[in-house]
Image 1 (cartoon, rainbow, N blue to C red):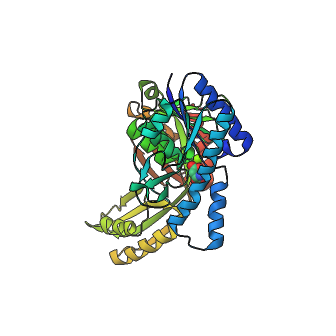
Image 2: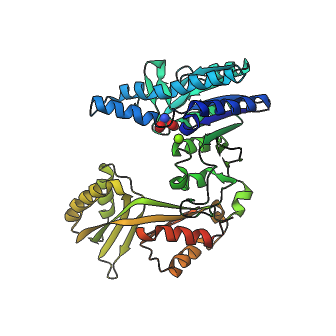
Image 3: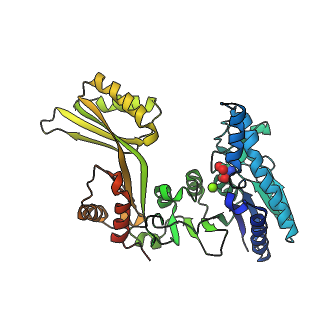
Length: 406
Ligand code: ASP
Ligand code: MG
Protein backbone atom coordinates (compact mmCIF):
# COMPACT_ATOMS: atom_id res chain seq x y z
CA UNK A 1 0.00 0.00 0.00
CA UNK A 2 1.58 3.20 -1.15
CA UNK A 3 0.84 6.66 -2.44
CA UNK A 4 2.17 6.75 -6.00
CA UNK A 5 2.41 9.62 -8.49
CA UNK A 6 2.41 8.37 -12.08
CA UNK A 7 3.37 10.82 -14.81
CA UNK A 8 2.55 9.95 -18.41
CA UNK A 9 4.39 11.77 -21.21
CA UNK A 10 3.08 12.85 -24.59
CA UNK A 11 3.56 9.57 -26.45
CA UNK A 12 1.95 7.66 -23.56
CA UNK A 13 -1.24 9.70 -24.00
CA UNK A 14 -0.77 10.35 -27.74
CA UNK A 15 -3.93 8.59 -28.92
CA UNK A 16 -7.27 7.49 -27.50
CA UNK A 17 -5.96 3.90 -27.45
CA UNK A 18 -2.89 4.98 -25.51
CA UNK A 19 -5.04 6.88 -23.00
CA UNK A 20 -7.15 3.77 -22.48
CA UNK A 21 -3.99 1.73 -21.90
CA UNK A 22 -2.83 4.31 -19.36
CA UNK A 23 -6.19 4.04 -17.59
CA UNK A 24 -5.77 0.24 -17.39
CA UNK A 25 -2.40 0.61 -15.72
CA UNK A 26 -3.70 3.26 -13.32
CA UNK A 27 -6.68 1.16 -12.31
CA UNK A 28 -4.48 -1.91 -11.87
CA UNK A 29 -2.14 0.07 -9.61
CA UNK A 30 -5.12 1.27 -7.56
CA UNK A 31 -6.61 -2.24 -7.35
CA UNK A 32 -3.33 -3.47 -5.90
CA UNK A 33 -4.21 -1.26 -2.94
CA UNK A 34 -2.30 1.91 -3.81
CA UNK A 35 -3.51 5.48 -3.95
CA UNK A 36 -2.72 6.94 -7.37
CA UNK A 37 -2.23 10.53 -8.46
CA UNK A 38 -1.70 10.89 -12.21
CA UNK A 39 0.05 13.77 -13.97
CA UNK A 40 -0.27 14.02 -17.74
CA UNK A 41 1.48 15.82 -20.60
CA UNK A 42 -0.31 17.04 -23.67
CA UNK A 43 -0.77 14.53 -26.51
CA UNK A 44 2.53 14.20 -28.38
CA UNK A 45 3.04 17.00 -30.90
CA UNK A 46 0.20 19.06 -29.43
CA UNK A 47 2.35 21.71 -27.72
CA UNK A 48 4.38 22.21 -30.92
CA UNK A 49 1.17 22.50 -32.90
CA UNK A 50 -0.15 25.21 -30.59
CA UNK A 51 3.14 27.14 -30.76
CA UNK A 52 2.99 26.93 -34.52
CA UNK A 53 -0.59 28.26 -34.57
CA UNK A 54 0.46 31.23 -32.44
CA UNK A 55 3.29 32.05 -34.81
CA UNK A 56 0.91 32.01 -37.74
CA UNK A 57 -1.01 34.80 -35.99
CA UNK A 58 1.98 36.93 -34.99
CA UNK A 59 5.78 36.72 -35.04
CA UNK A 60 6.03 37.64 -31.36
CA UNK A 61 3.05 36.29 -29.42
CA UNK A 62 2.73 37.64 -25.87
CA UNK A 63 3.93 35.25 -23.21
CA UNK A 64 0.83 35.49 -21.06
CA UNK A 65 -1.31 34.43 -24.00
CA UNK A 66 1.17 31.67 -24.87
CA UNK A 67 0.60 30.23 -21.40
CA UNK A 68 -3.19 30.42 -21.83
CA UNK A 69 -2.77 28.61 -25.13
CA UNK A 70 -0.18 25.97 -24.21
CA UNK A 71 -1.80 25.00 -20.91
CA UNK A 72 -4.84 23.84 -22.87
CA UNK A 73 -3.00 20.77 -24.19
CA UNK A 74 -2.62 19.24 -20.74
CA UNK A 75 -6.16 20.21 -19.80
CA UNK A 76 -7.43 18.06 -22.67
CA UNK A 77 -5.46 14.96 -21.68
CA UNK A 78 -6.26 15.31 -17.96
CA UNK A 79 -10.01 15.28 -18.63
CA UNK A 80 -9.78 12.45 -21.19
CA UNK A 81 -7.62 10.37 -18.85
CA UNK A 82 -10.04 10.89 -15.95
CA UNK A 83 -12.90 9.74 -18.22
CA UNK A 84 -10.87 6.71 -19.28
CA UNK A 85 -10.14 5.75 -15.66
CA UNK A 86 -13.86 6.05 -14.83
CA UNK A 87 -14.68 3.92 -17.86
CA UNK A 88 -12.15 1.34 -16.66
CA UNK A 89 -14.05 1.10 -13.39
CA UNK A 90 -12.48 3.49 -10.88
CA UNK A 91 -13.58 6.86 -9.50
CA UNK A 92 -11.51 9.66 -11.00
CA UNK A 93 -11.37 13.45 -11.07
CA UNK A 94 -9.25 15.76 -13.21
CA UNK A 95 -7.71 18.99 -11.90
CA UNK A 96 -6.00 21.87 -13.67
CA UNK A 97 -2.79 23.29 -12.20
CA UNK A 98 -4.82 25.96 -10.42
CA UNK A 99 -7.31 23.46 -8.99
CA UNK A 100 -4.39 21.33 -7.82
CA UNK A 101 -2.95 24.32 -5.92
CA UNK A 102 0.27 24.74 -7.92
CA UNK A 103 1.55 28.26 -7.27
CA UNK A 104 4.37 29.67 -9.41
CA UNK A 105 6.22 32.94 -9.87
CA UNK A 106 5.08 35.30 -12.62
CA UNK A 107 7.66 34.41 -15.27
CA UNK A 108 5.40 33.35 -18.13
CA UNK A 109 6.45 30.36 -20.30
CA UNK A 110 9.19 29.33 -17.85
CA UNK A 111 7.69 29.80 -14.41
CA UNK A 112 9.16 28.28 -11.25
CA UNK A 113 6.97 26.45 -8.78
CA UNK A 114 6.92 28.36 -5.48
CA UNK A 115 4.58 26.19 -3.47
CA UNK A 116 1.85 23.61 -3.78
CA UNK A 117 -1.30 23.68 -1.65
CA UNK A 118 -1.88 19.95 -1.81
CA UNK A 119 -5.02 19.74 0.37
CA UNK A 120 -7.47 19.34 -2.51
CA UNK A 121 -5.39 16.53 -4.01
CA UNK A 122 -5.01 14.83 -0.63
CA UNK A 123 -8.74 15.15 0.16
CA UNK A 124 -9.73 13.63 -3.19
CA UNK A 125 -7.26 10.78 -2.68
CA UNK A 126 -8.70 10.12 0.79
CA UNK A 127 -12.18 10.09 -0.75
CA UNK A 128 -11.03 7.26 -3.01
CA UNK A 129 -10.48 9.12 -6.27
CA UNK A 130 -7.71 8.68 -8.76
CA UNK A 131 -6.70 12.32 -9.19
CA UNK A 132 -5.55 13.26 -12.70
CA UNK A 133 -3.61 16.55 -12.81
CA UNK A 134 -2.74 18.60 -15.87
CA UNK A 135 1.07 18.83 -15.93
CA UNK A 136 3.27 21.71 -17.12
CA UNK A 137 1.08 24.44 -15.59
CA UNK A 138 0.40 26.46 -12.49
CA UNK A 139 -1.01 29.82 -11.48
CA UNK A 140 0.49 32.95 -9.98
CA UNK A 141 -0.16 33.71 -6.31
CA UNK A 142 -3.84 34.52 -5.87
CA UNK A 143 -4.64 32.52 -9.00
CA UNK A 144 -4.94 35.49 -11.33
CA UNK A 145 -2.81 34.17 -14.21
CA UNK A 146 -2.03 30.80 -15.75
CA UNK A 147 1.67 29.98 -16.15
CA UNK A 148 3.63 27.16 -17.76
CA UNK A 149 6.88 25.63 -16.53
CA UNK A 150 9.00 25.44 -19.70
CA UNK A 151 9.28 22.63 -22.24
CA UNK A 152 9.19 19.18 -20.70
CA UNK A 153 7.74 20.79 -17.57
CA UNK A 154 5.24 18.09 -16.70
CA UNK A 155 8.11 16.00 -15.27
CA UNK A 156 8.66 18.84 -12.83
CA UNK A 157 4.93 18.99 -12.06
CA UNK A 158 4.97 15.30 -11.16
CA UNK A 159 8.04 15.46 -8.93
CA UNK A 160 6.84 18.63 -7.18
CA UNK A 161 3.40 17.15 -6.55
CA UNK A 162 5.00 13.94 -5.24
CA UNK A 163 7.07 16.03 -2.80
CA UNK A 164 4.07 18.12 -1.73
CA UNK A 165 1.75 15.20 -0.97
CA UNK A 166 4.62 13.11 0.45
CA UNK A 167 4.18 10.33 -2.10
CA UNK A 168 6.22 7.17 -1.64
CA UNK A 169 7.25 7.09 -5.30
CA UNK A 170 7.09 9.16 -8.46
CA UNK A 171 6.92 7.06 -11.63
CA UNK A 172 7.72 8.79 -14.93
CA UNK A 173 6.21 6.82 -17.82
CA UNK A 174 7.74 7.46 -21.21
CA UNK A 175 8.52 5.63 -24.46
CA UNK A 176 11.93 4.24 -23.40
CA UNK A 177 12.71 1.61 -20.79
CA UNK A 178 14.84 3.81 -18.55
CA UNK A 179 18.29 5.38 -18.35
CA UNK A 180 21.09 3.62 -20.23
CA UNK A 181 24.86 3.42 -19.69
CA UNK A 182 25.19 5.43 -22.90
CA UNK A 183 23.25 6.28 -26.04
CA UNK A 184 22.02 2.92 -27.45
CA UNK A 185 22.07 4.50 -30.92
CA UNK A 186 25.86 4.61 -30.66
CA UNK A 187 26.43 1.49 -28.55
CA UNK A 188 23.76 -1.16 -29.14
CA UNK A 189 25.09 -3.11 -26.13
CA UNK A 190 24.34 -0.19 -23.79
CA UNK A 191 22.71 -1.54 -20.66
CA UNK A 192 19.71 -0.16 -18.83
CA UNK A 193 20.72 1.01 -15.34
CA UNK A 194 18.76 -0.52 -12.47
CA UNK A 195 19.41 2.52 -10.31
CA UNK A 196 21.37 5.72 -10.41
CA UNK A 197 21.93 8.67 -8.05
CA UNK A 198 20.41 12.10 -8.62
CA UNK A 199 23.86 13.58 -9.18
CA UNK A 200 24.80 11.01 -11.80
CA UNK A 201 21.48 11.59 -13.51
CA UNK A 202 22.25 15.31 -13.68
CA UNK A 203 25.72 14.62 -15.10
CA UNK A 204 24.25 12.23 -17.65
CA UNK A 205 21.73 14.90 -18.63
CA UNK A 206 22.89 14.83 -22.23
CA UNK A 207 21.69 11.23 -22.37
CA UNK A 208 18.91 11.50 -19.84
CA UNK A 209 17.39 14.82 -20.81
CA UNK A 210 15.20 13.05 -23.30
CA UNK A 211 13.76 10.89 -20.51
CA UNK A 212 13.75 13.29 -17.58
CA UNK A 213 13.78 17.08 -17.58
CA UNK A 214 16.85 18.41 -15.74
CA UNK A 215 14.93 20.73 -13.45
CA UNK A 216 12.78 17.85 -12.26
CA UNK A 217 15.91 15.91 -11.25
CA UNK A 218 17.23 18.92 -9.30
CA UNK A 219 13.89 19.19 -7.55
CA UNK A 220 13.78 15.45 -6.78
CA UNK A 221 17.29 15.65 -5.32
CA UNK A 222 16.41 18.65 -3.15
CA UNK A 223 13.30 16.99 -1.70
CA UNK A 224 14.60 13.43 -1.88
CA UNK A 225 11.76 12.10 -4.04
CA UNK A 226 12.52 8.62 -5.40
CA UNK A 227 11.81 8.66 -9.14
CA UNK A 228 11.41 5.67 -11.43
CA UNK A 229 11.74 6.18 -15.18
CA UNK A 230 9.98 3.41 -17.12
CA UNK A 231 8.08 2.65 -20.29
CA UNK A 232 4.30 2.80 -20.57
CA UNK A 233 4.52 0.35 -23.46
CA UNK A 234 5.66 -2.66 -21.40
CA UNK A 235 6.03 -3.87 -17.80
CA UNK A 236 9.81 -3.67 -17.52
CA UNK A 237 10.97 -2.29 -14.17
CA UNK A 238 12.76 0.86 -15.39
CA UNK A 239 15.53 2.86 -13.68
CA UNK A 240 15.32 4.13 -10.10
CA UNK A 241 16.79 7.62 -9.61
CA UNK A 242 17.41 8.08 -5.90
CA UNK A 243 19.82 9.11 -3.17
CA UNK A 244 23.30 7.61 -3.45
CA UNK A 245 23.81 4.34 -1.57
CA UNK A 246 26.77 2.02 -0.98
CA UNK A 247 25.69 -0.22 -3.88
CA UNK A 248 26.10 2.68 -6.23
CA UNK A 249 29.53 3.56 -4.85
CA UNK A 250 30.77 0.08 -5.71
CA UNK A 251 30.07 0.79 -9.35
CA UNK A 252 32.98 3.02 -10.32
CA UNK A 253 31.61 4.24 -13.65
CA UNK A 254 27.88 4.26 -14.39
CA UNK A 255 27.77 5.87 -17.79
CA UNK A 256 29.41 7.63 -20.71
CA UNK A 257 27.84 10.92 -21.74
CA UNK A 258 28.60 13.11 -24.73
CA UNK A 259 27.66 16.58 -25.85
CA UNK A 260 28.03 17.68 -29.44
CA UNK A 261 26.64 21.14 -28.75
CA UNK A 262 29.98 22.63 -27.69
CA UNK A 263 32.33 25.15 -29.23
CA UNK A 264 35.80 26.16 -28.01
CA UNK A 265 37.04 29.73 -27.91
CA UNK A 266 40.73 30.44 -27.30
CA UNK A 267 42.15 33.85 -26.53
CA UNK A 268 45.80 33.60 -27.56
CA UNK A 269 48.65 35.42 -25.83
CA UNK A 270 46.82 37.41 -23.22
CA UNK A 271 49.32 39.47 -21.16
CA UNK A 272 49.56 37.54 -17.90
CA UNK A 273 48.56 39.92 -15.15
CA UNK A 274 45.90 40.13 -12.44
CA UNK A 275 42.40 40.92 -13.67
CA UNK A 276 42.51 39.68 -17.27
CA UNK A 277 40.38 36.60 -16.63
CA UNK A 278 37.94 38.69 -14.60
CA UNK A 279 37.57 41.21 -17.43
CA UNK A 280 37.18 38.58 -20.12
CA UNK A 281 34.61 36.48 -18.28
CA UNK A 282 32.67 39.48 -17.00
CA UNK A 283 32.18 40.48 -20.62
CA UNK A 284 31.08 36.94 -21.54
CA UNK A 285 28.68 36.83 -18.60
CA UNK A 286 27.20 40.22 -19.52
CA UNK A 287 26.33 38.72 -22.90
CA UNK A 288 24.38 36.00 -21.06
CA UNK A 289 26.59 33.24 -22.41
CA UNK A 290 26.88 30.16 -20.23
CA UNK A 291 30.38 28.74 -20.00
CA UNK A 292 31.10 25.08 -19.38
CA UNK A 293 34.87 24.49 -19.21
CA UNK A 294 37.75 26.93 -18.75
CA UNK A 295 41.44 26.16 -19.18
CA UNK A 296 44.35 28.62 -18.87
CA UNK A 297 47.94 27.88 -19.93
CA UNK A 298 50.87 30.12 -19.14
CA UNK A 299 53.69 30.43 -21.66
CA UNK A 300 57.08 29.21 -20.57
CA UNK A 301 58.45 32.74 -20.13
CA UNK A 302 55.48 33.54 -17.90
CA UNK A 303 54.49 36.69 -19.80
CA UNK A 304 51.50 35.47 -21.76
CA UNK A 305 48.61 33.10 -21.19
CA UNK A 306 46.23 31.26 -23.50
CA UNK A 307 42.71 31.11 -22.14
CA UNK A 308 40.32 28.56 -23.65
CA UNK A 309 36.69 28.06 -22.76
CA UNK A 310 33.69 26.21 -24.13
CA UNK A 311 30.22 27.59 -24.83
CA UNK A 312 27.07 26.14 -26.41
CA UNK A 313 27.48 26.06 -30.19
CA UNK A 314 24.41 28.27 -30.52
CA UNK A 315 26.30 31.05 -28.67
CA UNK A 316 29.66 30.62 -30.43
CA UNK A 317 29.39 33.61 -32.78
CA UNK A 318 28.34 35.89 -29.94
CA UNK A 319 31.18 34.54 -27.76
CA UNK A 320 33.69 35.12 -30.56
CA UNK A 321 32.53 38.72 -30.93
CA UNK A 322 32.70 39.47 -27.22
CA UNK A 323 36.06 37.71 -26.78
CA UNK A 324 37.40 39.49 -29.91
CA UNK A 325 36.55 42.91 -28.50
CA UNK A 326 38.05 41.95 -25.15
CA UNK A 327 41.21 40.60 -26.79
CA UNK A 328 41.84 44.01 -28.33
CA UNK A 329 41.27 45.74 -25.04
CA UNK A 330 43.56 43.37 -23.15
CA UNK A 331 46.28 43.37 -25.78
CA UNK A 332 45.93 39.70 -26.66
CA UNK A 333 47.20 38.42 -30.00
CA UNK A 334 44.01 36.88 -31.44
CA UNK A 335 40.94 34.75 -30.78
CA UNK A 336 40.36 31.31 -32.28
CA UNK A 337 37.04 29.50 -32.54
CA UNK A 338 36.61 25.75 -33.06
CA UNK A 339 33.16 24.37 -33.57
CA UNK A 340 34.02 20.83 -34.70
CA UNK A 341 34.50 19.54 -31.16
CA UNK A 342 32.51 17.57 -28.62
CA UNK A 343 32.67 16.73 -24.94
CA UNK A 344 32.83 13.12 -23.81
CA UNK A 345 32.40 12.38 -20.10
CA UNK A 346 32.84 9.37 -17.85
CA UNK A 347 30.42 9.59 -14.91
CA UNK A 348 30.11 7.66 -11.64
CA UNK A 349 29.73 8.32 -7.90
CA UNK A 350 32.21 5.49 -7.35
CA UNK A 351 34.97 7.89 -8.43
CA UNK A 352 34.78 9.43 -4.99
CA UNK A 353 36.27 6.26 -3.55
CA UNK A 354 38.18 4.75 -6.49
CA UNK A 355 41.21 6.25 -8.18
CA UNK A 356 42.57 5.88 -11.69
CA UNK A 357 39.45 6.59 -13.75
CA UNK A 358 40.95 9.66 -15.44
CA UNK A 359 44.15 7.78 -16.30
CA UNK A 360 42.18 4.90 -17.82
CA UNK A 361 40.08 7.30 -19.81
CA UNK A 362 43.12 9.13 -21.24
CA UNK A 363 44.86 5.82 -22.02
CA UNK A 364 41.82 4.54 -23.89
CA UNK A 365 41.63 7.71 -25.99
CA UNK A 366 45.40 7.52 -26.60
CA UNK A 367 45.14 3.88 -27.72
CA UNK A 368 42.78 5.07 -30.45
CA UNK A 369 44.87 8.12 -31.39
CA UNK A 370 42.18 10.51 -30.18
CA UNK A 371 43.74 13.82 -29.20
CA UNK A 372 42.43 15.61 -26.08
CA UNK A 373 42.03 19.41 -26.37
CA UNK A 374 40.74 20.16 -22.89
CA UNK A 375 40.17 18.25 -19.68
CA UNK A 376 37.96 18.97 -16.71
CA UNK A 377 37.11 16.92 -13.67
CA UNK A 378 34.65 16.97 -10.81
CA UNK A 379 34.22 14.52 -7.94
CA UNK A 380 32.07 12.21 -10.04
CA UNK A 381 33.02 13.07 -13.63
CA UNK A 382 35.96 13.33 -16.00
CA UNK A 383 35.33 15.19 -19.27
CA UNK A 384 37.48 15.59 -22.36
CA UNK A 385 37.01 17.90 -25.31
CA UNK A 386 37.92 16.05 -28.49
CA UNK A 387 37.49 16.32 -32.25
CA UNK A 388 33.80 16.06 -33.16
CA UNK A 389 34.43 13.30 -35.69
CA UNK A 390 35.78 10.98 -32.98
CA UNK A 391 32.74 11.32 -30.68
CA UNK A 392 31.09 7.99 -31.50
CA UNK A 393 34.40 6.11 -31.47
CA UNK A 394 35.32 7.59 -28.08
CA UNK A 395 31.94 6.72 -26.59
CA UNK A 396 32.21 3.14 -27.88
CA UNK A 397 35.74 2.45 -26.66
CA UNK A 398 35.16 4.09 -23.28
CA UNK A 399 31.96 2.11 -22.78
CA UNK A 400 34.05 -0.97 -23.47
CA UNK A 401 37.00 0.00 -21.26
CA UNK A 402 34.78 0.54 -18.24
CA UNK A 403 32.91 -2.73 -18.81
CA UNK A 404 29.48 -1.19 -19.13
CA UNK A 405 28.00 -3.60 -21.69
CA UNK A 406 25.70 -6.47 -20.77
N1 ASP B 1 3.57 19.54 -23.21
C1 ASP B 1 4.73 20.22 -22.71
C2 ASP B 1 5.86 20.11 -23.72
O1 ASP B 1 5.71 19.51 -24.77
C3 ASP B 1 5.14 19.75 -21.37
C4 ASP B 1 5.57 18.30 -21.28
O2 ASP B 1 5.26 17.49 -22.14
O3 ASP B 1 6.22 17.94 -20.31
O4 ASP B 1 6.92 20.63 -23.49
MG1 MG C 1 8.76 14.87 -21.60
